[in-house]
Image 1 (tube, rainbow, N blue to C red):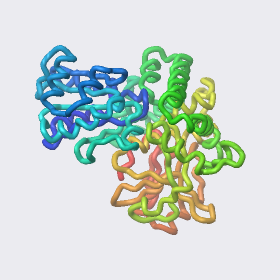
Image 2: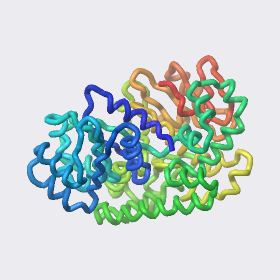
Image 3: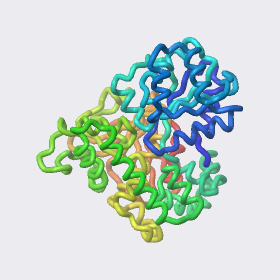
Image 4: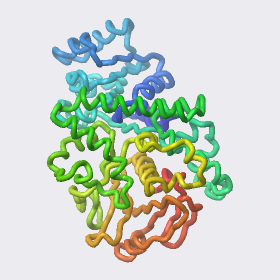
Length: 431
């Protein structure tokens, strides 16, 4: 299975300013596989240490964090020497031993010759709750589920992924149906590596559903095991309510749909927990347009999307037969799957702020607003080929963006102020 992140790791290895690297991402998005595969491809040896329920490692890091002493302890643990030039040191589930996180500072300052990558399924929560290590002493890499481009490669359609990468839209249009069929499969299978791997081996949608249900069960078990006891019921209520929130015409998150009379302050901590561990994407509203968009964020209004479109289709009970029903799949649940899909692909883009826009009267809504640092791009999502919409024109007349983008099932077309980009090419946005 090919992951674009491997290329980023290879650049990290060769960087003159390399720091210990922390890979962030939700549980089961493939962090452990990625680290081991990178080690296999780029190093002569891999020293893999899993900190989960590892009392020896907890003891090793409990006393002073002298790097020479730590390396000696790691060598004793794995039973061989660690070559600073040719060994990749992997710290997995590193959040289980906070002192190991703190040690990264000393590896960077006193022994930068060692190549260290770390990950943990609940690392985001550990980092946001005061686990001690200085900012600036580590590099970060965000790992998401497989993007649609990676999915194409996984199912043996690499040449079609390459056409998208090259922006050869004349050729892409000629093979449009292949992309549409693959996109339907992606809506059902999603990008969780285990589900994709199963699908590539057997093309059994029922088996994919079993895997997705197991992943969802594991997530709910994490709520009980790792979250503060008092917010566990709220986590479950929010998590199970997201599909119905996204099925609304207006996908803004409404607390009152969780239960009658619900208030923001009751659920804010639970939403933060889900966001920190990478299970949901929180997309905030902006009430005006200007750089940086963060300055115009309305923190009280937001949408919540899941980490993966396949998990959303599993939670909503999407039937396999829907894949054969023309393009109706893309309009299921009022386009909820399509907007989820677009959000998920946008999240794979680096250094992009993602928001949405509504004016005060609610007469103009833009599904996503992208802040690339130098320019702002409005993105309108259409689940089918019907492209009529007043909102994008209203937005254009008011803010006069350099370019506006509409993504739908229609073919690629560059107009004077509007770029029509097919849904299956949304990763190719240039911002």
